[in-house]
Length: 407
Image (cartoon, rainbow, N blue to C red; front, top):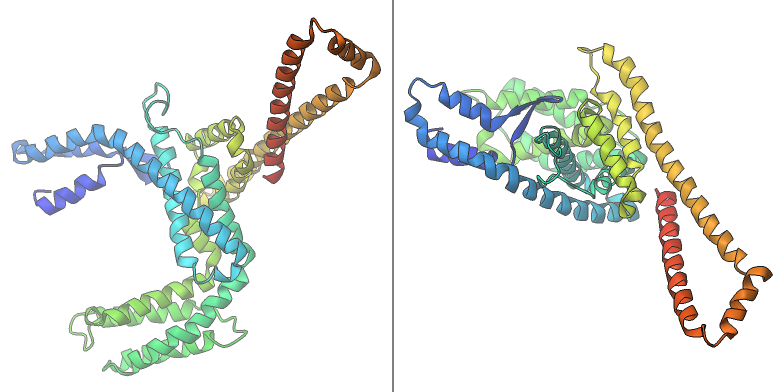
């Protein structure tokens, strides 16, 4: 970090975060770690200026970083909402827009995990309250993320057909003259022929050939062209290198679309404590926000990815996750159902009270009161005020019920 350009890059990285993830919920306070490392040097005066700058960066990173990421979440909400409306209306664009959608989902996933990571490591007093880490619109971001995933799952065959035709069309049209015109070794020519044959087979209508072998040949060809003394160095063939990388991406998305969706948008780390407690707290806060009620079922959809965090190294977690994930999803749905039932009860009660006012024994006093000139003006004022408040409460309850039903 003695080099100015390296240190400037480090300061930018440390300028918007105070916590770095090591594994799952294992985190590291990065500013304190750098302070410890620089303080343990044999000659601490040698990097005294850098150490002072890193220490001074910790405070602004905690405040300015929260505002920066809040702005990113607001931007992602607007962008993903627009993208979701477009792809829902025109599902044929899922293939061409897949890279953009995956980048958007990955950015939203990173922002959500950043928020939970810093909430879990916020100062104990307030747990994020007053530190700029509050986000009342988090349910909407979760909803947009899960809806985009669901859209790709629904039109999975359409997306795979697009990438199959793309590999047999544009990828083949570029790679065939590019590879055949190169002065490769015998092994390189063999790999190039295998890649072109794989593309030709993948591009045939109705083809369902797995492309793992094609991707392996692509990797071998890139490795062969990257070794020292290669007759055709890949670093001198940048358009070809880009085309090979894009074709590898297309083949990967064709073969492993479900895996790609989890890779770019999975939130399985939220199953672990303390993230799971903060996850449920965000849901309960959403129950109190009328503008977020329609997005609350996304919390249940997130539980579907919890099982993906288990692996062969921790087999004992599978049974626990299998029991806990449905319980969390059931808790979310039960809370939403209870709120809907309570809202229906309140709307029905308001309607019953309004109907009861039209009964003869209740309507007669109103006519008598209206006929009494002395009490005419104050009675009309009180009646108008009472009617206005009742209508406002009724509209609010109906809006809550509509949002819950929409969810």
